[in-house]
Length: 236
Image 1 (tube, one colour):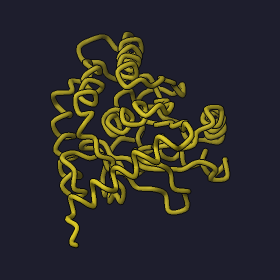
Image 2 (cartoon, helix red, strand yellow; image 1 turned 135 degrees about the horizontal axis):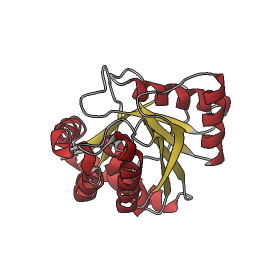
Image 3 (cartoon, rainbow, N blue to C red; image 1 turned 180 degrees about the vertical axis):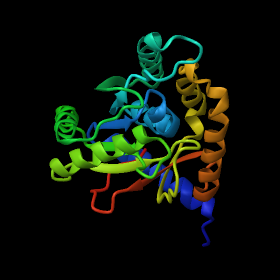
């Protein structure tokens, strides 16, 4: 009896769902350069994890001090922190901040140590971070800090990379998460970042998830690349 591609995908989805309910609760950390980056690249996957009962923390490198629309720069940290917390509420996740300044990321011995300690304190099973080949220096910085923390932790957690609209370059994903069922939640989390004018970038992200979906057999999908030396993790 022949089995269609759609049938195979449906069977695979069913197996993933069954394994998710039988698996122990996971702790997932998604690191990003600014408030809005984890949501842009991973909001659907985050929603899928939390609806299955897993814990998710969004760890932002800074509080977005560098830009918040028409408001004065002195207000940006408070405005964007509030937006991040609102987005996390929508995703049933928790917000955390690494204490750096937007546009002034520092990568040195002291900051490597501080970030590694903060990440280790979360005791993650899985960490997602931004792809290091990127137009924004803060995105490149969070990728470097996360990679270093993973190495310091002796690769004890799974490490995956994600993409964000317009900034990520040369990204060739290998694994996909179907986010079709949580698109409204994903959109709401991204649009919580009002000061970042999501109408300018969210449609581009939708183009990406539709393209990734076409490649993986779903209406919409978020795409990831696992570090070659990382253990595999459950993807919802």
